[in-house]
Length: 118
Image (tube, rainbow, N blue to C red):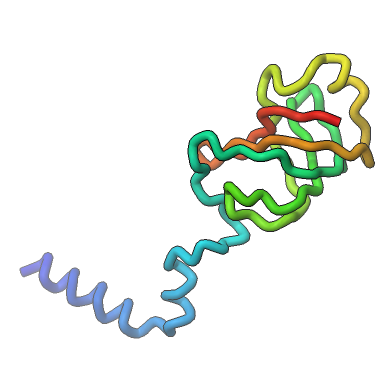
């Protein structure tokens, strides 16, 4: 009896929401706030510009082009830097304004630069 009341209450609450609120929770394929799960082996080279380098924290702030395999539009954001993504010499030489090509992985919702080149 209590389960029935709970389910009835939840259904009534959902029915009272405007359709736009329900649509926000439905997968649309173009959610600009969350990366879609990556398809295995689908990492592509993406054009990017360095905005900030944090070698101690192993992070890069990049302004990147569209990342098609993650269904993510171009934007500026912080990425983790995978161990071995580039040589020590290349990483030490990076500075804001440098243009790169990067490969981005999504693992459990964390976006990581897995490889980079000038």
